[in-house]
Length: 234
Length: 276
Image (cartoon, rainbow over all chains, first blue to last red; front, top):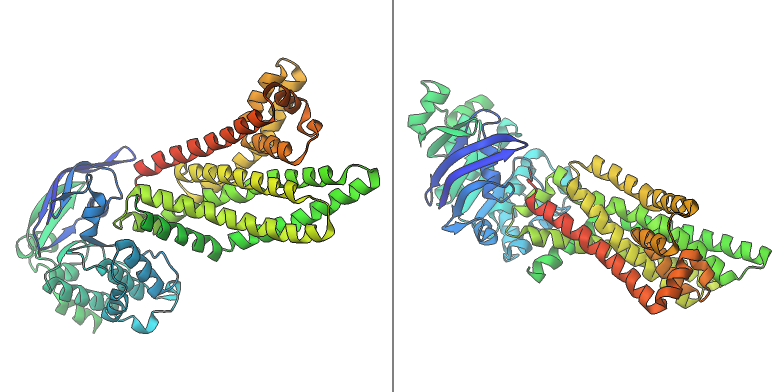
């Protein structure tokens, strides 16, 4: 579904990504992990057309340079810091639905899915970070794109917010959605990803199934699943 | 370029500017100042026995030249880099739209917001001044048209500053700098050249054309008055050399060239920009 070859990005004279290759099959879930500045977010930003790059990226066989609109139609993007183009939750989703050429019937359905139906007419700037993230997820799901691109989806959430969002994303992944996320959190990765790609200083240093690669990152105990998160909350 | 996307993005831009109260504050400020300036113009004319119409029109023209760039340069300057800072612009670009559509949609929206503000401001001022007399309908329409053309040029110039600057604060500072240069420094430069008597009226006219404010001033003066003295010696020279229709076409062409160059340069910068 996603094929990246020779991705190289230079920002402000500094090489951020160097010759990166990545493949993600339909229905697969991959997590990009690595220290701050490793290039995780840069990969996702290249995918959605925010950064200039060398190399090639294709989504569903569509080259993102040749047909950026066609490629982005297959992607739902959830930025690390949620951004909305209108004042209310319903307005924000309606605007994105119109932009994506999606039926407006999806708006109440998705508000219901993320548990924000009761807040549809409230101003987004009065929302908690958890509510903003859930609204951002609803916007990413408009038009039911086959790929979700999530940039540290739970980074600014409290433990309860993390658990709720991870649970929601887990259900979506089970429905066959392809997920590509960047993350620092082992619980999130255990719940959502089947593969890990470890980045360091713009290069892939390890890649493979979660069980195989995780021990090298988080030690012999590997990643902690959602149960670990629930224990922490308790 | 899809018209549906263009309409959606430009309508949003208008809503953003209305929500920020920029449109209404700009219109209200312009109305108050226009009425005050017209009153002063008429009072002075009565005292000194000068033709009321020309004096009031000239006073309003000077207000337009000061006020319209002051309002529109920051409007354009805060548009792109402001939304890049708060994450809205990257979010828009990440949607299934092209950068060209985002740029055109935002630009059309900004120009619509500027037009709306001028329409309200001129409309309210026309209502007040119409009751009291003092400015003819034709002269007022010419002033409004000149103000709109100037607004288009300075809004696109603001957008260019916005795409070139790395932050909203820098873009706004650049907008204030551009206003000072256009309103004061360019005139001082032309005055200094005229005083030095090194250049003839033709060369001076050519140099003054480089300033869109001067082009608007000459174009509006051509439209509102039959008396050539209002244009100054350089303007008189240009009218005699070119004739009124050719001079008006040259001035309109100058303003169109400013708009085209500014918006093209802004688009090139935006198309290459990394949005983080």
